[in-house]
Image 1 (cartoon, rainbow, N blue to C red):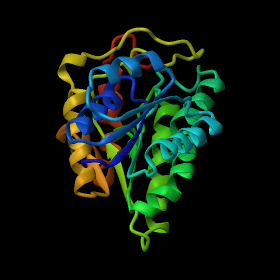
Image 2 (cartoon, rainbow, N blue to C red):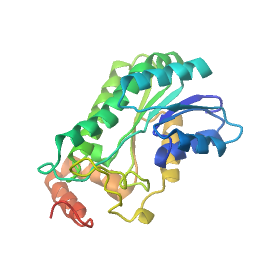
Image 3 (cartoon, rainbow, N blue to C red):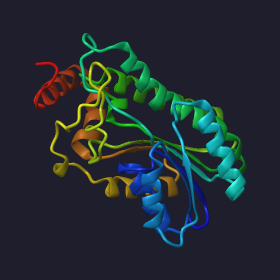
Length: 267
């Protein structure tokens, strides 16, 4: 990864921030994108000696994504890895949710991935680089109370799997990375039924995989050019296995597990 140019969206916190630090430790050059530029500036200060481009980016806006790639090429001349990490979540049952919430989830999570991938792809094909999407186990099993989130993550997985096949003869590496529950601020800023942020996480973040550990696994999967990364055994690999062979059982287990959350929107 030394001197490779890595573009990371949603780099201001959580997994994105941890990925930036992991790649910096390997001598990579970083193009970091997020809406909160001040946090990217703070992160840059923590990584002395690393070549870093900071770009204010709202991935739901196509032009922001186009400009991010153009500025990266202008600065570094190439793109070796694009990690589509930016994303938001929600917590409300579909019966109660304002449809603007679903649209916002799709705009940020799915179309953000589509826009960035579209404008990075010509450069990734030149370098035979890596196109990465950070999804979730919610991209393999529907999570109750998170219809828009699961829908967007399923969509990303289908989109990237198709791109892998389309470019099978061109040397493009496509990785779909699905962490289980990972400690980050994604649940604190998750949208409620009216689009406001819920403000508090309903889960014990201390019992989850750290963002740093998650980032380490993703970077290793990129190095090995793996097609899929499913993290954690119970919430990850076992869930996917049950979904394939015992889907009705998984439905019941998922319902019971998610219903135990404090102030669950369903019981």
